[in-house]
Image (tube, rainbow, N blue to C red):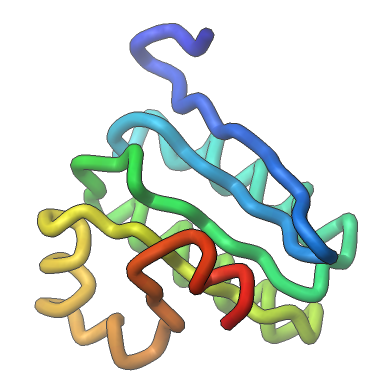
Length: 115
């Protein structure tokens, strides 16, 4: 279990898809953990990387920047990046910044794996 200042990220693999599920707020102190896991995930050359954000109730600009970096890495790796299960609060951040137009976002994990 992660300490209060760390972000726990659960890994899963399903049909050539790597799934990362962070649990907790993604802010300046915790985004480096997610960034490291994203980079490690792309080292494994998945066809698709899904980031399940159902366990994230808050994300600041450093968390958003981490996901933008993930998109850049996915393009370099020729892998598809899909975000899923965003909470209303996190989804509104993406809408306000119009990032929902650039990311593939699905409602459920099953949709993300098949997207």
